[in-house]
Image (cartoon, rainbow over all chains, first blue to last red; front, side):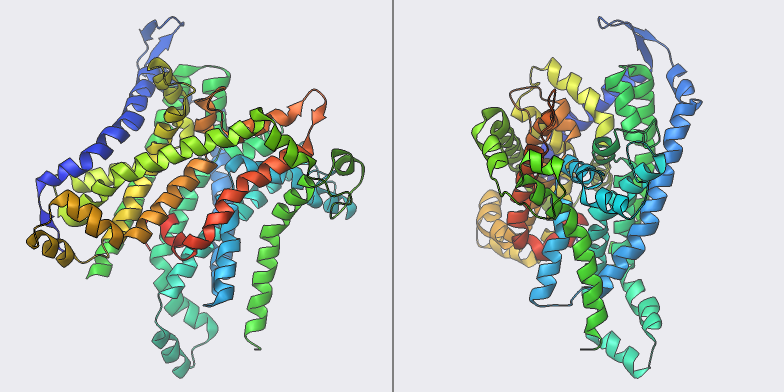
Length: 290
Length: 268
């Protein structure tokens, strides 16, 4: 659509601007303030410059949390994206069963994050949970509260359970937009199933898949509630991801300076990824409108 | 038929994987604590509604639901009220800094709540809003307003511009046109945006827990108190969990065809 140039449109945007400024910029300014000051309480601040940033950049605790975070995000992307595409390819195309699958698949997405955690906390317990009990009955030595590997497995399976449907739904929406004529042409050419996927379905899903990958990356990168409820970041620190570490530092230990410096760096990473996301999306929008 | 079978099997297995943990929660919520702890049963032997009764008769429990519903509703109303005109502006006009503003909104959707938890706490404490519903509603605007703007903008782009122009020629003022003609045209978009605002506000815990203590405590935070000196009240915990799933499950049928669009921020 060709848009009219009109700067009065700012008046329509103003309420959003004010509201989001209040709920985003003001708090962020507080964070900046903490990041460059030290405090001994009583609202007395001492300028420390970049000291907290230096401390955080060299902190092995942060490095460990970052490493775990990247590993976690990489694993769940590697599982959820192919699995989501696979599920989308197998979904019924239309009719009652399509709606039925859509609704049931969306269900995990609508559960409060801490309830997701609670569900898996219960589900994985050896004494009262179906999963834990079954694994124990099969002879596995499974205990997510003691064994780091089991804790990781639980958190990953939980995230796959929680979010694979998102990837599947987006991929499904992309598949639905492919005209039947494409498949007919492929059939005439006697294209293999793989060729249909590789040269018709995958290119058509490119846009939605990028959205799905970036959303999953962002959301897994700031995951907090679910692993916190299930493992509390433990055993030890083995499932302490960035957000969990941050909240521990800021609210648990009240180390405001380091926590604030950490927050800002965290936010910059997010900003960078958002920018990539935005550029990719606006480019795709432009291609579509051509 | 030969071709349908394997895909039906895949879907069946996947849905089974999705539903088993939920089934287990429902199953536990209908059991007594002795049954949960003493024996391992795939379905409740002594079917009991006691766990639900505990929640529905104890104010400290059910007020959690009331609080959650109040701040979620407030949030949906505020988000939509400010997002509607803004989305219209983004979909119809180009103006100075529009792209930057649109991008900046997106960054807030992507902002980790953990970064904002402490500053929010201090901000709302200092203006005397701590432990009020409006504080949580405003805090959730951080990610819901951008989401609503993006979703609505996606729907509004589908409405041809000629409609606006015809309405102006017919002598409609902007507010009258917007409410009388434009909003009915994008009614499904408004519904979807409202649903997603509702949902993301409902599932969020970190901010709502940080910003409340007693009067506006959300159900999700109330759930943590089942850990008591006498051990865990698993049955009640499961029942509370089931009750938090119900609202989403009830309305999802209506938005099933738009759910991908909503999660993709209006970009499908």
